[in-house]
Image (tube, rainbow, N blue to C red; front, side):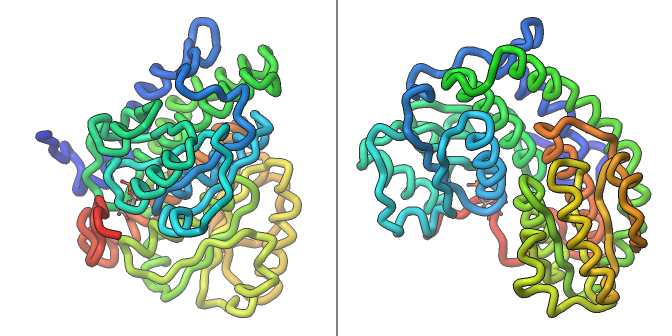
Length: 368
Ligand code: G6P
């Protein structure tokens, strides 16, 4: 591929801003926007009949899979076993040959993910691949391929592939829910309408938050450690935020389930370690706010990433509050991924690191 940066300083920046476009392209493959329905799913995997689903992946793709787990369990009532590929393949997981397995990989070449796929194949499971590169090994060895249509991703730190993986997983979970009778036709319509709105909302968010994220990044670039907290689907997002920041800015960061704060990381809280709280105004909001209070009571500085309802409902003093539009729950992970990506990006720019080619990391890891 011949790909250039266009008007952007780095591929990562270009890929962040490309998201509304590539996601609408991806969704177009999976959704019938006239009928507001998910397109008929592949016959290769019978989601109506499978007793469970196994998901395996590495890095950012694994974190997309973790969000997918919440969706498959909630919407399709399908139990999901998920692990990073380098553990999954060695764990000797008891797997039912009636089950299906999904492997998520941007490159489709990651060695551990491929080994997990082959392990599941040997155990007789039906194999689905959520990949960006359609001609990849993982795609070729699968029964069903679900392309994410993100286009070439050059930045080592994954951005648009992550939100495209999420978008595809959301449609698969809704489709599985329809097949299993756990999502009604009316619910499907409502969910699909939310997905359809997503690219436009993403564009709006990207156009409005950049200056705030840039000035916040100046503060972050002075820190040695950063903690990210989230609950529900915001928990994998907290881990993705931390992963992104450490990968490209080399600042130590950890993502934690908000409820686990008191079981460890609370010991680290002081004015030197900012705590980034990802909390849309969902059914977990009040719980997460009480975790924020625990941080505030110990002198911790909070960067609060929330929506309009969340900002109005919380009276806590924060170092900064980033207010996103109120959106339906199904699209919140993709919308909340944007400030997280920009924060990591601008912090790395301030640090003067090689944003697109961070040290010691590779875009595709074909060694075990
Ligand atoms: C590397 C890349 C990450 C990516 C991971 C999995 O660590 O730097 O950005 O998430 O591999 O890669 P895959 O191609 O399987 O999604």
